[in-house]
Image (cartoon, rainbow, N blue to C red; front, top):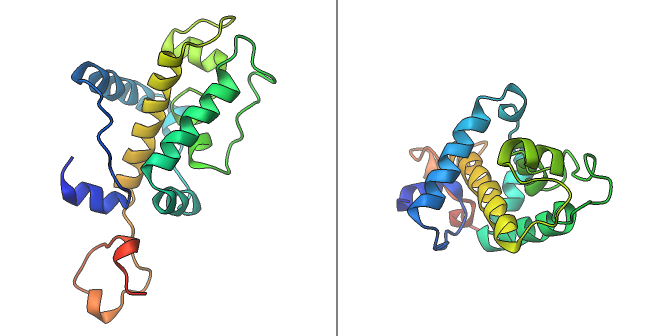
Amino acid sequence: MCATTVERMGMEMADTGNNDDEQQWIATMLERLSHSQFRAKFALTDKDRAYARTKGKATIDRHAREMLRDRIGAAEPKNDGRQTPWRGHPVFTAQHATATCCRGCIEKWHHLPKGRELAEAEVNRLADLVMAWIERDLINHPVRLSTPHPQYACMPSIVMSQQPT
C-alpha cells in the first residue's frame, strides 16, 4: 500500500504477513459482499472512523480478534443471531458488512458450519476480512477539516495527527 493511501486512512499500517492467496480471498469476499444490497449499505460513522484512527490499526485488529473469538467463536454462541450490536464500535459495523456477525451468516457466506467451535485460524481469517473492510472504509472516507485553516487551504485532506496542536 502506498504512503499516500496510508496517510489518507490516518491509521498506522503494519505488515500483517498475509500471503497472496489470503489477500485474494479477502478481495473476492469483499467483492461478493458488495453485491448484497443489505451488506453494501454499511459504512462507519464519523465517530467510528475517528475512533479507529485514534486507536490505530493494531488496537482495532486486537479488538476484532477478541470480539470475534468471544462473540461468535463458540459452537453455540450466547444469543446467536442477536449477539452483535448494530453500532458502537467499528468492528460491530464491519461484522455486519462482512457477514461475520453471527454463526448463521458465517455459515451462509463463509461456509463454516454452525455447531462446532471456530478454530483460531478461522477466527483470524474472519478478523482479517473485518480489518480489510474497515481499512477500505477509512480509505474511502479520508480525514478532512470542516473549515480548512488558511495554511492548509491548498491541501485536499490531511491526517489528524498532522494538524497543529
